[in-house]
Length: 226
Image (cartoon, rainbow, N blue to C red):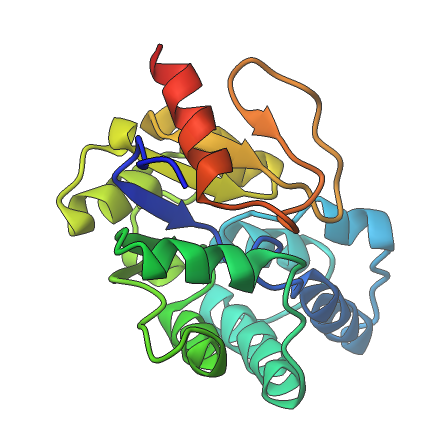
């Protein structure tokens, strides 16, 4: 392994570490249909990576007569219930996180999901990280003023680690998340899950994290800094 050229990794959660998007889609469909509305797969795809407050507004426009807080709580409860039964890890995510942690590299979880769900996912890593904590900081959707694609969450993640965002690698899967990571100044890796992303000079596109390691992250960051 080469010496890392970066100082920290900022991880997205939904769609990047865990493939929870089908859980969210199912929860959205159940909620909209319960209020007599129709919710198609294409509708659900538009919410991927979006702040939950924005998602709630769209669901309200489809006839869900609940407050924003009630909608978020309902969706989160359903997804967390599914996660308690089975955690759908994304290919290569646990292995890469283990590589990062064993190398002593700081990490932050940067997610638009609320903290209670982020902590549930973080706790699920325990059997896979040889006793190491998965993250040094968690920045959750209920703790930021501006959700993705605004860079606030990534900037706060870097700040919580005491590291300049330009010295970080950010790993994301969605259009909103990638835009936020790029805007923060971090070297950005896009690993799309349910919605394809185009090639771009602003980020590096990988089809999967499987087989990726520290050398790959270091090479990307070094190339960007050159």
